[in-house]
Image (tube, rainbow, N blue to C red; front, side):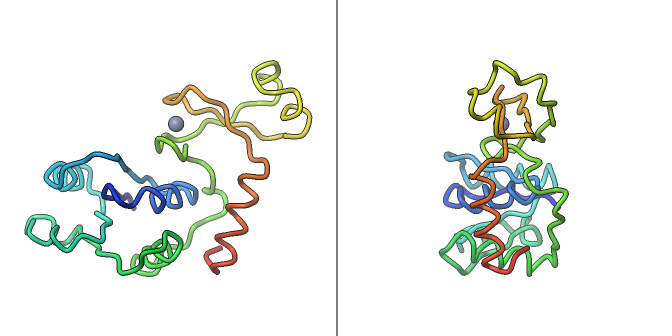
Amino acid sequence: MKFICDDNLGKLAKWLRTLGYDTLFSREIEDTELVSTALKEERIILSRDQQLKRFKSAEKKLFLLSSNQPLDQLKEVLKKFNLKPEEKNHFTRCLVCNQVLVPVSKKEVENKVPPFVFKTQEKFFYCSKCDKLFWAGTHVKNLKKKISEKGLL
Ligand SMILES: [Zn+2]
């Protein structure tokens, strides 16, 4: 299942990516472009904007969220589409750009990450689009804690 978030749902997009769902988001996107991308790429449109209902062609692709809170929105999406995020898919996508991350060995990142990180981390990932290395660390722990508190894991 693939998604496209409207320009107000950046945080929701990040959460969906965190769980491994292919999710497009851009800060500046016209409604017409949002809809045409969704139809072309068979994506579900996530939005809080009732105005999008005017696009009859996208009626079946549109899911209007009622919550204001990103994590509650995430809950709405998972429930609506009966999604059960699998642990193996978590943190497999770049949170910044949605690209699938490539695992890299510890050896490969030596001298490319700060020494402390190299010393304390075992798992590293690379985003070819951002040309950036990522590692799990406390950031991932915090995200996981937040989603498990919501009963989403
Ligand atoms: Zn990226």
